[in-house]
Length: 192
Image 1 (spheres, rainbow, N blue to C red):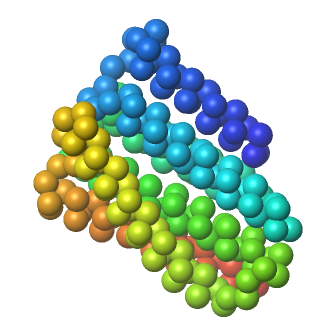
Image 2 (cartoon, one colour):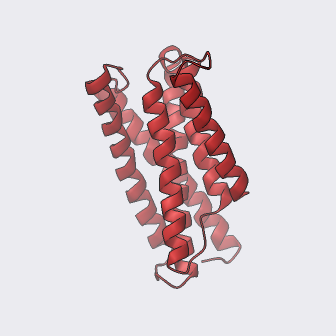
C-alpha cells in the first residue's frame, strides 16, 4: 500500500506541475504554487518521518497514513479546481476537518511506531493528547501559509478572522475525532 501511495503522490504532483505550466487545461480559484507547495511539503514530511523512524529502528508510517494524507491534499486541490471554496462555504470546513484528521493520523502513527520500537513510553491517552496538541499547532502553521500566500500573491485565501478561527476549530475537531476513534479501536483490540 505504501508504494501505491507514493506513486499516487508523484502522479498528483505531476498533474499540479503540468497545470501550473499550462500544459494541462485545469484552472484554479487560487494558485498552483500554493497547491504544489502543500502537496510537496506533506509528501516530504511523510518521507522524512518514515526515514527517521526507520533509522531509529521503528517501522515506516502505515500506507494508510500516506493515503489519508493524499486524500486530504486532493480534497483541498479539488475544491480549488472546481471553485468549491468560493461557491460553498461548507467546503472549506470539510477540508479543514479532514486536514486536521489527516495530520493527527500522521502524528499518532509516528508515536505508535516509536512506542512499538520501545523508543518512547507513553500511555495511549498521553499519545492522544500530544497528537491533538501537535495537530492544532500544525493547523496554525497552515493558516500562516495561507496568510503568506495572500501577502505575496494577493490570492485572498486567508479569509477574515472568523474564517481563520473556524478553520482552526475544524482542524482541532477533526484531530479529536480521529484520535478518540483510534484510541477506542486500540483499546478494544488491546493494542497500546
